[in-house]
Image 1: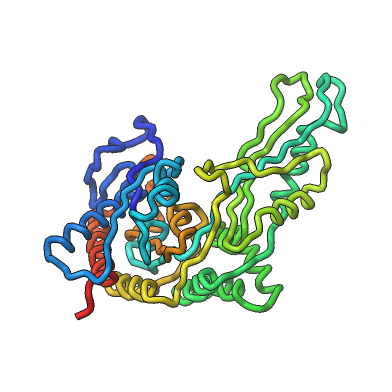
Image 2: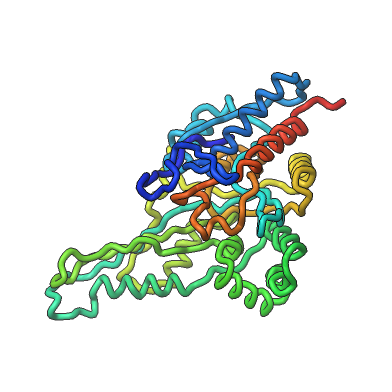
Length: 378
């Protein structure tokens, strides 16, 4: 499965035209070169290779190239799962969501997404009487909202590990420098003080890894007021909440309401992201003790010769919809430089790029992986 849609571009900010696929200095530049054209190309080439060889198959191989992943899955994967699942019903699903990490030009480790957090937005709405700005009110909705945002930002839901995240940190420690590896080992220890210390370090230094530990909350939009001299009667903050698998949404909303502890502030789910069914997305975990993960791990080791880490994605992919049908889903991806993102060359950036050699290697990886999972035993 690969998605053909990409995020917006501002052509004026691009050195290379965003849809040119310019080749320069060993890289291919363009929107979607990382997210998600490699999977579209790799899957297509895998089908062609299976047909051309031809390879005797023991399983069907289905290629879904869909749109809408970047903002409207109701026209893409969710639509297919809801309306036409019989066309894509499968034992396993391979898609984006992880990749191979390079640092200093050398491959550090490979990752496989076996779980992902799912987004469900929450609005906090503070209300109070409006009035003249020259006469400050203790009931000012903006003030109540500001306190609520500060309370939510200061609160941290408890650390909860699963098979994927526990294995991720254990294996990451094996390929990391000793001073950093200590934090990874501490976070999976049974010592509450060590876990708390590692959690604090991760939140300060590696927020992506910290987000794997819990359901996360990020206040991203604040709206309130329309004139400098008018106290507004309402102010709203929108929270981006990413739920880990297994969380009870209603219980979380109740916990968050207790954290805010202000009757002037209402908390409610806002229906983001939109859905065909009108129901929030549900997170689930794929197994790491089955044939599919073993084959993926073995194929990655064959091509890259490094440790393979199962990972829980903190963003969102279309695999979340497929997993709801009981399909075991695994995300993988091409090698990319760890330094590229901060430099502005990562996915969704204005200079998105992929190493040309790594695109070719990823295509070969996809062909080998598909063949290993689907071909008839000799």
